Amino acid sequence: MIGFATTFLLSVVASLITAFDAQYIGFYMLFLAAGLGGGAGVLIANLTLQAVHRRRSKPLFITCAAGVVTGALVVALGSLFTGNPFTLIWLGIYAVIVTPVVYTRISGIRL
Image (tube, rainbow, N blue to C red):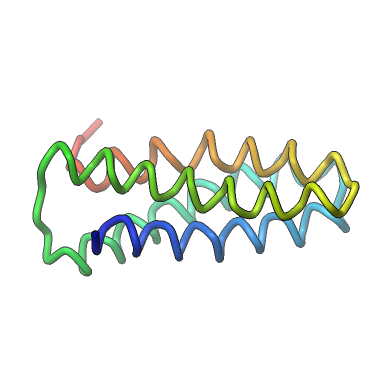
C-alpha cells in the first residue's frame, strides 16, 4: 500500500505539472513531456524505494506501476473539462514514458 500511495501521489503531482505546461506550450510540449517523463520517473522511483525501505517483490513492482498509471489517469480525466486536446496527448506520452522507467528502477533491472 505504501508503494502504491507514494507512486500515485507523486504521479499526480508530475501529471499536473505536465498538464499545466501543456496548456501554454503547445506542440513543443512533445520534447518537454519526454524529458519530464524520464526525470519524473527516476524521482518517483527513488522516493518510492526510500518509502518501502528498498524492499523488492514482483507484486510491488506491478503495484507501483499501477499507481503511476492511475495518477496520470486521474489528471487526464480532470483535464477533459479544459477542452484542450494537447493536454490529453501529452499526458499520454508522459504516462507511456514514466511507467516503464518507474518499473525498471524499482525492480532493479540494469540495462
